[in-house]
Image 1 (cartoon, rainbow, N blue to C red):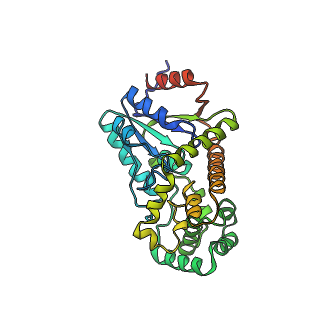
Image 2: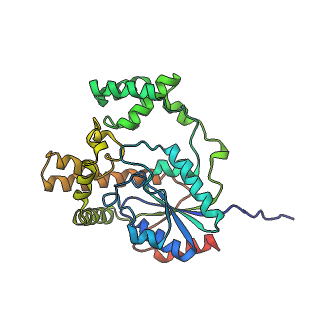
Image 3: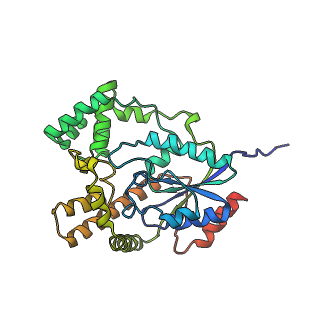
Length: 321
């Protein structure tokens, strides 16, 4: 006689979706309804000072529901996916130990992958090699180093932009320290022990019509401007550590969508209308990349936040029952 196997792992919800799809409101609602706490899965929200432009939950929202993985680094400091996975796992373990529900909410695909599935083994950072690469980039430019990467690791170069210093530097660092392409390292499977020890419901919220998402992006960008986004960037520019940095636009924090465009506008690179158009376009591109990644999450359930509220509620209730 067949017997059923009970999955005794603690439950968690992964709330995914493109930017401006309404994840924050849903996460807050579920946290209040089911006794949960929010674990941010967003590469911009880990930085202090990136609040308005990164749509960080405000003080009132954080007072309503406990949040984790916010404001962990200053904008000039490094923070990797491996760092995130380590810290977020500790947060999830703490939430579970207190009998609460972890709600993993955000749109950074690499962070989700690192947290849920673990990362393939990778050579550790090498400060000496990084210093050499940074000096080389200052002399020749990151596009030149990207061309070098294309020779030693064409697969990595194909997916890394010509002006993505963080990823170019890491790929070349791995090559120079190990003699193997970062693509080869990433192709190795992560050990089973690296997976999050939870039973996870993956929920994707995304408007069915691309035009709807574009309209939401434009509306939110204008709301950010009205809330003082440019003043926020001015405050970042005034920080001594950023003023002393030789290339602040190369920092991952400042390269976050909207911040780079605002920084360039304040440098006088364009007028206000062009800045707004560039900011909205960059956010749309981010949403497109996020949707591309989400389509690869074959075990995720998709919902349109505008029309599927009842279906979403039923899916979550059934999972937690």
